[in-house]
Image (cartoon, helix red, strand yellow):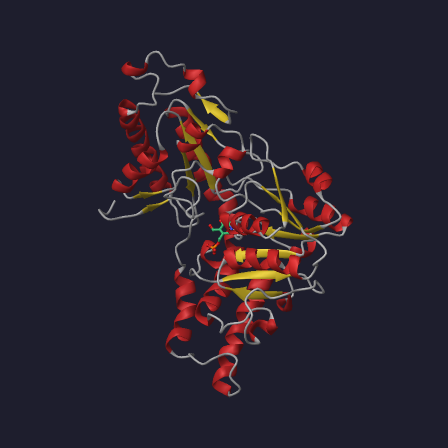
Amino acid sequence: MPENKIFYFDNNATTRVAPEVVAAMLPILSEYYGNPSSAYTFGHQVGQFLDDARARVAALVNADPKEIFFTSCGTESDNTALHSALATQPQKRHILTTSVEHAALITHCQWLKKQGVEVTFLPVDSEGRLDPRLLERSIRPDTALVSVMFANNETGVVFPIAEIAAICRAKGVLFHTDAVQTPGKIKLDVRELGVDFLSLSAHKLHAPKGVGMLYVRRRTKFQPYIMGGHQERGRRGGTENVASIVGFGKAAELAMEHIDDENTRVRALRDHLEATILKTIRYTRVNGNTVSRLPNTTNIAFDFVEAEAILMLFDQAGICASSGSACTTGSLDPSHVLVAMGISPMQARGSVRFSLGVYNTAEEVDYLINKLPDIIARLRAMSPLNPLHPENKSQNLEALRAGPMGVRSESGT
Ligand SMILES: Cc1ncc(COP(=O)(O)O)c(C=O)c1O
């Protein structure tokens, strides 16, 4: 392998920009620099690129292009859905969501709570699953919005979005899903799903950072979050990031082509990685349900080591993976997702997420598989958390591992 090669297993954090996407963007950056809102032909030409991209992104989720508008990121899309649902229904002051959402939603909800909005964060079970019946019982007459992510960014667990949307529809409550982790992995069809709002972020599907989109079902009352000019048919002020939006359009097209590869080859690579780790490294298990799960993600708990230490040694070997989500990396708190699943803080701190993508190869996975046992063995030998360590003989192994178990491995070395 070349000396400075990057072994990238962090595709849920962000993805490499596809060469086709770069090629689609270049003319906008170099030639078509006009403002799409300008009245002259040069502006209209740029507006045409915008329309094409909108049609492509709409096709990715089977929406009408008029039902989607571009934002600056997935976070803005999530914030906008919350804001609009509350602003258009001032008599309703309750939000129903889950305890495992991305910070893009949770942080806004926490702020809303301080403003007097009531927020219910539904629990998940030990495998990270949500009970739709509990969700149904928790909807109140004053619920302005139910918001449930499509797939969890840390564990990959996929939620039953069509079923939840049907419950919300029957109760007459607006429903938003943060589908940021799904394009190219799960087929998205807003009509079949029956959602009112759906958020995406371009940088998760091989397009640049700093652009997202929000789908708003036709005839849904809407109040903009970013108020300004008449861009995006008055739904989002601010001159559009045209080059990145064009890249998003191209990436949307590629994502539809990638679905097969993600669900066959990438899934097989992920399964091979996971099975080999469980087989060859003792005291490891998978966090989260392994049946209803994204094909590219595995979140593995390594007992008696700190994930941050693993990631440091990974870094020295050119391997990129993460603990928790990229947005919370650096915080010493254990992942709120794993804690919500009842996993002990100590185990949560030893958990690493590997998220693969269409650019990963079998050779890269083998490199990771070869490096990992040594890294874990080195860290465990030094770890004060390790009850097998000579200095820690008195510690109780089971007590240290208290908390619900996922798929678990006791074998191997
Ligand atoms: C599930 C989920 N929602 C929202 C976001 C935020 O997207 P962005 O980085 O575009 O703001 C992310 C990014 O990690 C995510 O994984």
